[in-house]
Each structure stands twice: as C-alpha cells, then as structure tokens.
Length: 260
Ligand code: DGL
Image (cartoon, rainbow, N blue to C red):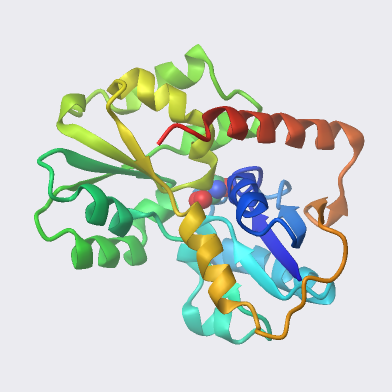
C-alpha cells in the first residue's frame, strides 16, 4: 500500500512519524510544499490552487490514499472537492472533540492553537459550536511557530519568548489542555510545557488521522513493496542537506513523542 502525505512543509512529518508506528508495512510519499510555506498566511483560494497540483502529483504516483497532514489546507477545501478524486483523501482538523471527550468535564479551559486561516475558518467555528457545550474552548493564532519550525528553531529562547508574548493576555493557570491545531506545533511541546507548567496536556489529530486512513483504505490493497518513504519538496526529489534536515525533524519528534 502506498500512502501520500503532504503538508505545506515539515509539520506533516509529525503525521508521518505517527504513521510509521501505526502502519509499519506501508510505503509513503511525503510532499512538503516548501515553495509555498506558510499556508496559514495565504488566502484559501491560493491554497486550493496549490493542493490541486499536489493531489495530481500523488495520484500519478499511484497512491492508494492521500493524507492532507495540514489543518490549514484541510480547512480550505470542501468535502465535495476531496470526494471528486479517485482515491480516499483524508484531512485533518484540530482535535477539539478529543480534548472535550477526554478533559471537558474538568474545570480547566482548553486552548486551541492553530494558524490564522484555521482559526478564522468557518469549519473550526462550526466544530467548536458543535462540541463545546460548556464554553470551555479558547482559540489562538500562532503563525510564527510555523516559521520557526521551518528554520529548524525548535527549542529556543525565541520560541519561548514568542509564546510568552502571544499568550500574555491569557490567564495561563486556567488552562489544562492545549490542542495542537497545526501540525508544525508538535515540535514545540516543551516550550508550551515551560510556559503552562508540567501539568499541561496536549491533543493533536495525528493518531485519529492515521486511524481514519486505515478505515478508508480500499479493502483489496495489499501490503506490497518495500516499506520506506520518498520525500519531495514541491514536486522535486530532496537533496542530501534537505534529508539531513528531515532527519533532524524526526529526531525532535522522537524527543517529544512521550509528552502528552
Ligand atoms: N502545518 C500546517 C497546519 O497543520 C500549516 C502551516 C502553515 O503552512 O502555515 O495547519
């Protein structure tokens, strides 16, 4: 089985990282749209144009399913559009429902952090309206975390300082859970912990997305082929320096994997 995973950049590697654990026999194509990152600061129209080309790229390479490992891109496309392609296309949304199901009964608030497009999008507002019955959810845009991740600045005073400033109007002790509503934010779990304290918990959509892939894969897909991943930056095979960067990203994801 061949699974295509794409994101605007390296955020979706957190989904690939999870997929290695949950689908160890699969072949993957990982596509980082590095020419156009960050998506979160583009318009939905621009994003739709980028991803149409990426779907075609994935379908030409015989993928059995495509994962939009990007909350921002998912929020910019409709379900009808996704259904018009010949393979299942699985999107992501901030794991707000998971946070409410797990921790909604507590009296600590839930902070959903994502890109400006996701935070402003109707999809997220409809989701929050549907599941947040007791008004426990707050939203925040953190676009700079995407740029820091893309420059490989994961754990740093800059990231800590940015978070502190972005959240300075909030009463931090009121929060029990942070929803990582952008796949790039997984790299910064330790910065969030430093700011909110050891008790803070996280939810993300990674596990739910791979479970959804498992459910939606056509039944007749065999394991076939050697497990492994081909990496592309905006359609071009990556070079050695880019591969080293991806390995560094995967090492950071290993390091923060147990923090929940
Ligand atoms: N990683 C993406 C997400 O999950 C978006 C980052 C960006 O390009 O702004 O929303």
